View 1 (cartoon, rainbow, N blue to C red):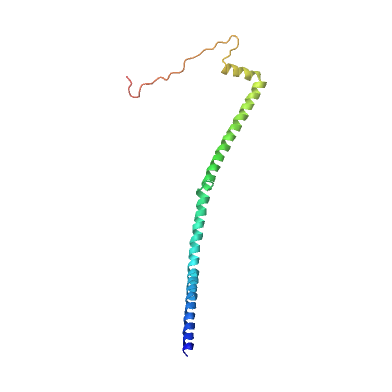
View 2: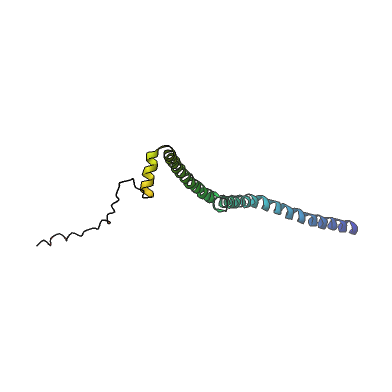
Length: 138
C-alpha cells in the first residue's frame, strides 16, 4: 500500500511539474496574443514615418526634387532667352552679309567711319542745371 501511495504522490507531483510549464507556456501565448497587435501597430507606424521622412527630406527626396524642378524651369527660361538672342543675332548677320546700307550704318556707328565731305561734331555731355527751389523767387 505504501508503494501505491508513493506512486500516487509521485504521479501527482509529476503532473504538477508538467502542468507548470504548460500554464507558463499558455500564459506567455496569451500575453503575446494580447500585446502583439499594439506592438506591431506601433512598429508599422514608426516604419511608415521613417519612410515618409526619407521620401521628403533625404538627399534624393521630395525637397531635392522640387529644387531640381525650379532649377530646370530657370534653365529652360535662360535657354529660351538665349535662343531668342541667337535668332536676333543671326538676322543681324544676314542683314550685314546682304545689305550694304546696313554695313555702312554699322561701320559708322561702331567704328566711327565717315563718308567723304562729312564732319563729325562731338557735343559735350548734357549737364543738368539746377533750378532754384520753389518759393525763393526775388
